[in-house]
Length: 413
Image 1 (cartoon, rainbow, N blue to C red):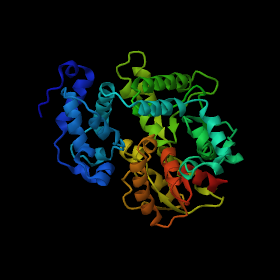
Image 2: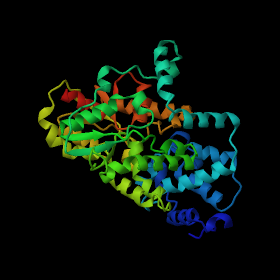
Image 3: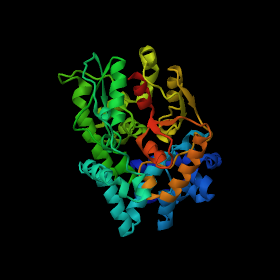
Image 4: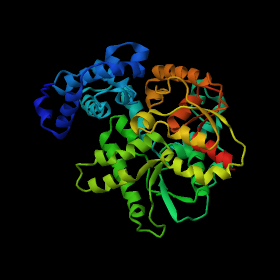
């Protein structure tokens, strides 16, 4: 397909990359059947094929309107279309390029700017934890919709970190909101790895993986987050501290795992960080990638009370972004859990980072559709692998929704 990108963009690195992706597009429409927003709205422009058409127009220099921005805003960036596409179109990368250009050319309404700025700064701020604590103290007085987004206070076990040292060591990214919102996920990860003879280390200077800012249009801020994390991790990657050398950088939030695995690509043209970013991405592991090797080490140690009947919701960032479908349920089954993968497991739950806050109507519809499928298997609990999915689903059901590592940790207690 011959594309004539706008003169000011065509010869840039991103322009060449976008043109190469567009050449792959055959417009077959297979992706329509797996696009959550198209299934809800039935609008071609709210499908991957329609959004590619819009982005092609933008990249060719056509006028960019608020309507174009609206259809891009409605995209969850779930990348379901990528695992469906027979041509292997890198929709996610094309979308990142198109969204950045639209963000530059279309001024957002003042209220929208305020909300997005508050999310970029507030969710990654040191003030998030005390603000959440205040919300938890008055949770009973909050409107139902807001109270559903504020989890109850965690118990003491959530802050119990193992103290043993092991020869095998990994780095853990704590995340931006997870330490305050659901701290037990991180400590449960450390306890499970400790039981398997692996020590979990943390670099205090590391923070948000950068995905939050990037997806809110602050690409420079997202790259700054990536560089900060690389700097924080590098001494442990190189074995330059008394703590020794780590064998992997582990993420227990699949959205962070995807972001860190793409550091190498994102910083490939940064002469100062390119090599280190590539090394960090090569060491990045989603926690579920360690699970097959953990099974034999943990199999004889599951003596605690066990929630056996589980419904598993695989996050989009895990199954479509990282292409790790099957790892969690297979590992849990090998350890004796009864795990069901409900119908439509490939569809997004509607969380998608800050999407549930910026597009609440669509996000709620997707959540209700997802919860109906999960409830059909009558589970004792729902498990997932990303804090955003867990929080979003829990807001719509009385069935406990947990990270799979918490269920495993409970069975080890």
